[in-house]
Image (cartoon, rainbow, N blue to C red; front, side, top):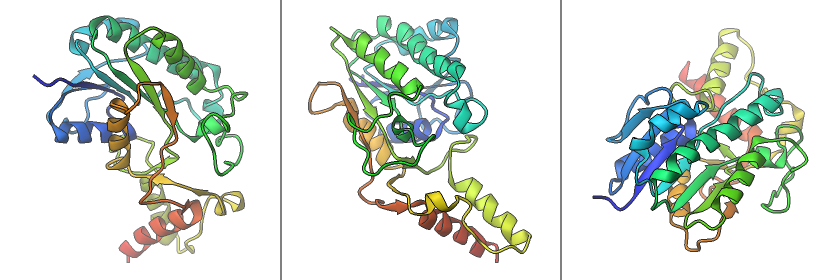
Length: 273
């Protein structure tokens, strides 16, 4: 029997599905995928259909959660309109409730729980309401004055972990691209559609982001490689102290939104010729 049982919440999303592929293919641990819809491929793992907004659903899943040692929490409730949605009190409340419901069902049946990994992003620094100031640093650059479910979830984990044997880490990748079939969070397919539409209309290939974004440089993380590996390291950290980690990719660093978007759309443009 494996000494590690990894539960992945949000297994159909961009990050969750990448973690599912990684842990499923790596072997050596039991893996349970949590999501409302069944992922297209399970990679030898077990799927449990669950609505994290419903406490009863989480309680019913308790049997599958027994003896969990690691939780990768990548579940997300989105509201319409990206910017307004992230400032919507109902969106903030729902995401907070989802994590609380899952932990309430998981913790009593997981006495050997060792680590919880929580996903955040650059919205912690207010990138959805203002240009990102580079470099952004954990513990220094957060926009706490901007309502955000990140703070609700983080505060909940800090309080819940007090006096417990398990610990937590928060990962903040800057920008993630990768495979997310059936999901709406991947950047690449919309750029491909955009390039194809421009070509069909006979219009020049231009950048749609506006002047304010042309010089904004960020790091890009590829979920098939960096996110699961970082999550794996975070699951068994060298120190037991809870921590917030800004995750960046050393192999794909200094990504300029203009350059990246142009390169991707150009590729689709050329493929159409």
